[in-house]
Length: 105
Image 1: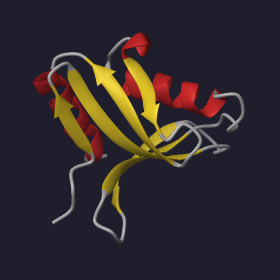
Image 2: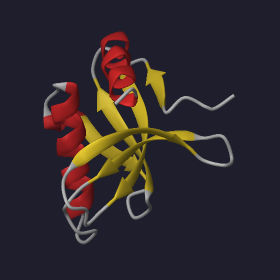
Image 3: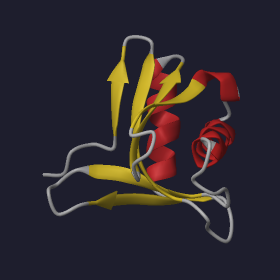
């Protein structure tokens, strides 16, 4: 059984993302499961992976998709890797519902 692409916390959610920088446009592309059974949300951003530009673009993209302030979203792991963990502060149950809807699309 695949592992969920997010984990609830007492103060929000940890979201697992696979980021592709230098894409044609900024978008979220649903959930992907790797061979080892881990799942993550696929994301593409136009920004280049230099000086944190791609991470910043990812934070903005996810914040907009979830309807939360950009200040509540931050990359907490995988800063220079494709696989990242984003921490999103807020009410966990409400965030989980919104994130599950992203995974469907």
